[in-house]
Image 1 (tube, rainbow, N blue to C red):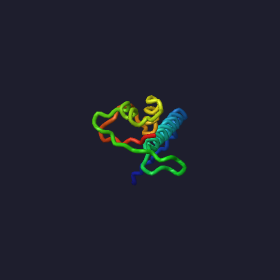
Image 2 (cartoon, rainbow, N blue to C red):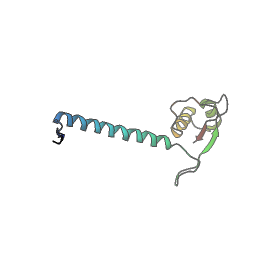
Image 3 (cartoon, rainbow, N blue to C red):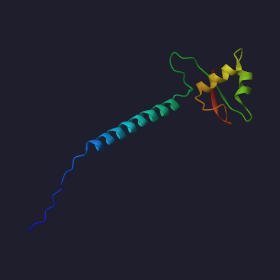
Image 4 (cartoon, helix red, strand yellow):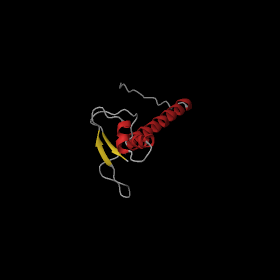
Length: 107
């Protein structure tokens, strides 16, 4: 006699199939969000201006520098607060705190 094992196929229940579909949808959405965040982080100002855009001046942050100090030097006729907001946006900074050696693009 030969011993053969039969493998039974059990189809997924509708509830389990729906739960799997929801899980895959949520994972796909999270993947797209993370990809967007990563792309956004890489879209920070670079040395080479894009065609049609203006060139930026770049500085390296020195010990003791703050955005307010830099605004006093570089804002030139603009509101210091507006200039700081532009620098934060342009460099995709998460806060106004600077670290020595940071490289900033200036508007």
